[in-house]
Image (cartoon, rainbow, N blue to C red; front, side, top):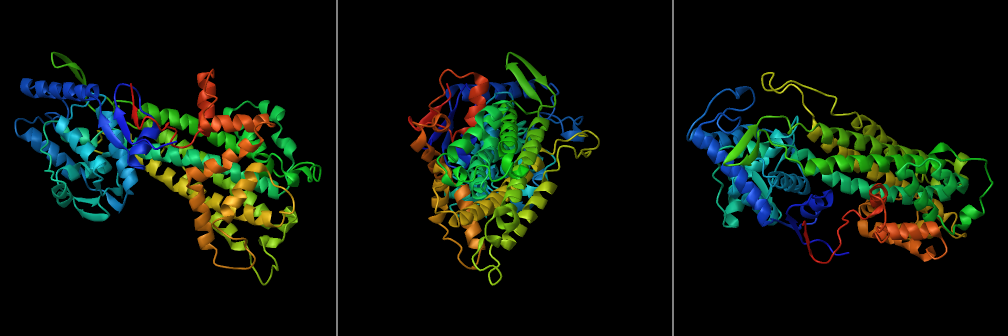
Length: 558
């Protein structure tokens, strides 16, 4: 599977993978002739409004509580510039470059709906920022919806503020000059278009979907390793039993676990040693599956938003017959709720992982050496890493509190219900980071537990995962500095290629294991024919994060 080198915005809807390809992987973004035509049509409507003197919010009026102040002539361009400067008042550490790039990408997609009225040269300038790797420095805090984050991107077009360019932080004007570019001169409504809408929370959420997709796949691998190390009872994952509760995500997880654990002598020799396992062990399909289902729901919500027109006002029709409609499409409630829900779901992945890893180090329930080390006492082993996991779980419980239920009044009572969608998306990223670290610790501990069981054959997938970690982290024979081991484990969990290696190991049993064969087919998408949309949607969650076929190199929306 080759990386996509160009994303072309045309007529069809875009996917979260397109945003990730541009923001994270550096794919070139361009617009089709039809997309440019839509942008030009909306801009021509703005020119008609200005020429006619018709009152239209943000075109020839003040903003927010100042919406009843009329403006004329040169004031319209000045309003656009002043809008960016006055709104660029965020605080806190700068967003990572990929997050800012995701926001810009989502904004451009928004403008190509052709309902905003942004001048063509402004969209061209945003494309230039992306494609020439000039990334505005955007403070991470200060948006109740989107305004301050978007404004910090917009001022870079004016040559104001700082940007990341060629590995250095420098004034925006200096970076523009290095590329032979001039600051943009804004026209009527340009300033409002640049700060308005939901691209901020939507772009951030697209990146979060990518990370959540990958993490759910790894969670099944790591959970299967812990299950095997604790000699779980496989009846809990029986296909007929799992099918009696037909949540789509649960079916996928059950299939994954059976395939990953196929051929395990450890489990074969452990059947019947207990009546049933603790819930954190036997409920992996139910808990992991629920997270997958919430991820599927969040993805649908976020992709709908990505392909929506979210400016205010919106411009409908043609220059000859148009309507200017003030409404509330910039309200990001759908994305905010989706991000909040996904944060809860991901926090639960971390919560159950922490319970499993705690059992691994407790000899009372594991049947393994205390804290997974020889000579416990002189060696503390894996004792304190469980503290770390517990701390991260506690933080995730705090972060899982919904942002969307907070509400404040802004702009002189004019904006009196707010989504807090950007806050929701940003805290989702923190939850994902924490959950990744928790699963990295579980991965480390499960692999160490395997060292005490390796006289028996492991499952085909769990064995591959164990060997993969051992290429980076040696077995823990005596106490050593553990932080680098956790970092190495977490790095593996951030790798799609290595994840694919583990799942593809299940092909080794595909000929004799129906579940393994289905898993292998679903992973590479080869069973996509003759599936219902619902089935395709649920099974698509098993696809790699950047699920875009390689050739041709340009992925063009028809």
